[in-house]
Image 1 (tube, rainbow, N blue to C red):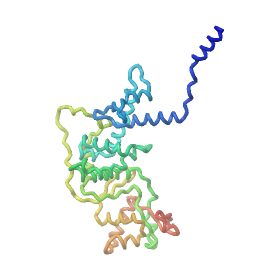
Image 2 (tube, rainbow, N blue to C red):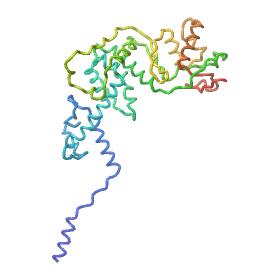
Image 3 (cartoon, rainbow, N blue to C red):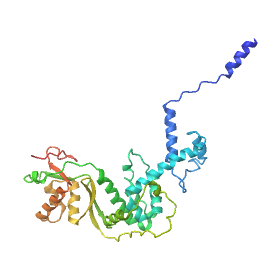
Image 4 (cartoon, rainbow, N blue to C red):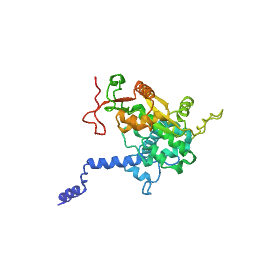
Length: 328
């Protein structure tokens, strides 16, 4: 009897088998970890000590990562939290240096942090991070105050540079092969990387000067709160005065360029986006027919820069993006 009781006691003390973890547990862990890493930092660029529900973040961190002999679980997850935000902010520093110059570092940081909370990164590439920044600037007039108008132009201008630098390129059009085609069947388009802008400030000159004078560094500068060492203060660029310009942002031989356009050139190029044949394009772009020599010079220049592609259309002409076939 004694032996039986001892055996029964040992059986009662035997721990229950642990439930095997499955992919649902992994998904929960990954989501919770992402929440902590992507949560905005506090005003001191540190992890927030209070969690979303008001509880201590430390308790939530303990469920995700273990402490070690040097760092608590919260300190360990803070490393990833800070680096995530520093990398995103620095990416926008790199893509929008002109916007940072006209707003100033503090105001720019406030803008991009608010932007990233509204539009967190959802792409595998940081190239797309600033895609919604121009409309975000448009919708935040109060935040930008006196800088609102120039910030609108600058955000559009600098995002256009991102698009112009790495958008796809279509086979370049050879005008000499199309000289004898019927204008009523000849269709022309601009390359996807050619961005047309109507700006209220001469930002091309301003940004070129900024690039020459800039000593912009890497991520540490994006969140640096230490005052510059004593010495001769760096001369700040003066924001340009209002002046309407028309601009094409494009690339040539894998380098980025800005080209000023006349109002008529801008009108003709923007009309090409309506998928008109050359005949309809020239008939509808202007109230009075333009000078044929001027038109020819424009198209020769744009073709030389590689801006144009197209050909004649056939049975696909009624589609938004018809197939193009150039004739030998």
